[in-house]
Image (cartoon, rainbow, N blue to C red; front, side, top):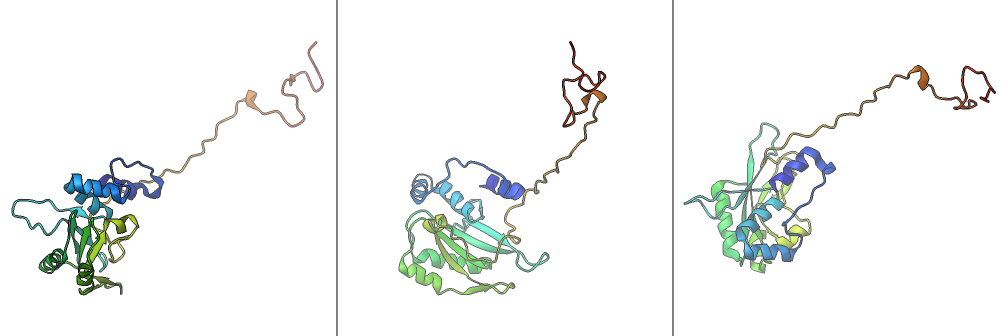
Length: 213
């Protein structure tokens, strides 16, 4: 996923590439979640442009990824989104835990990415949360749920536009395409092209209409 982001950052839509082994539909993601939950976590975080948090001994297990952004201008404060990824069963307790991590880390937004559909109480818990008010005049829920099915449908985190604000990854330098150069080739005396009424096989020194016998 990091290579993909750097390719897009350097070449934009002009680059073509093939992805191998990455889930292309919900059943593929479900199989990955079952067979390798850790790889599923990396894949899910990559879908929203977040970076995985290295889990060390004693580290808080409530944070699987982070996403940083700016919405106060160039010199403004760097803000963050905390992400938790669940490949198995989920319940309201997971959202409440995320809310606690969100408040402790003083993060602007918290997102739970889940393989399975959340229950109605979970949706209600998320909807009852506060909102983050961006200086750009937009409002975003501080506690959000994203399912894998929603990711495949194109839904993403409700946050300030990251086109010019995402600071999660260092961007690759934009590739510059050199303009084509037209180099004139000098014509030699014998390289002149025949005119419209000139026979290309005629000897120019013999005069018009002359032919060899």
